[in-house]
Amino acid sequence: MSDWTKGFWAMIAVCVTWGLSPIYYRALSGVPTVEVLAHRTLWSLVLFLIVLAVQGRLGALREALTGRWVGRITLAALMVSTNWGLFIWAIQAGHVVQSSLGYYIFPLMAVVVGMLLFGEKLSAAQAVAVLLAVTAVVLLTWGLGVAPWISLGLALTFVAYGAIKKALPLGPVLSVAAEVALLTPLALLWLLGQGFGLMPEALAQPLAFGADLWTSLLLISSGAVTAVPLILFSYAARRVGMATLGLMFYLNPTLQFLCAVLLFGEPFTRWHMVAFAIIWVALAIYSLSAFRQSRRVPPLANG
Image (cartoon, rainbow, N blue to C red):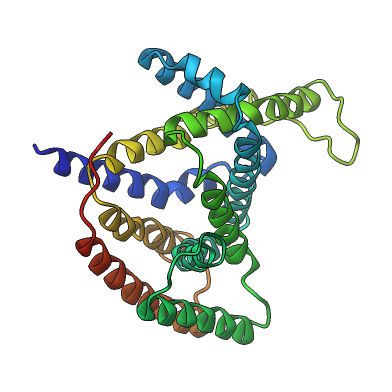
């Protein structure tokens, strides 16, 4: 099997895991979002530490946490934790259609941020795609009488996360390990505060972890659900072109959308239908433009 084929199937595994993750988080719907987020942070750090120890890179993690990039890593950690928390809450609250829309919007919003912050040029096709996405959001807001704030929040925090990390000279595994390492003290403080009854009355709630074996196992497995796809993504990114990765990414929100409508029975109105149709057209235009641009750029050597 060629390296490209291995990378292709690794990316398929990534997108399927992310796309079907609503099923996993829906199984934890009885657990408060903050507790799920805390365990996701804690157990993913454990798994990342094991991986980095096997690779002999724990020293690199220490350097990342004490070096000149720690401020940027902290900002990235805040953005990714906000994105994770909003995503988990959206699934538990029955807004998976909105979460899928957010990840459809994300690449188009990223184009605009790239133009505004990094001086990247916007092609005519990309401009049309962005305008179509804006039109879809406006129509959905008008039709439903409320803006899709969950979708916009997920897309915006993920774009901000990517923009913050753009200049970080760290690989994806090491950078995310550093981020969860910075978030872990907060996660532990929250869990210990709840466990020992030290939280204010308005925030106090019993911990789900330890209440039953199944829930505890699900919370522990959140580390693998978080870390393994990121490790596979890092593997795929070294073997498959970015244009291919970008196109394959849409499998993630598509599976989320199918989970929402077919498994969870979430309402899908005619306004959703119109908005999603426009978004899909916008993504087709954007993807075709990105693919054509990638074929005109010589491939970079792996280093």
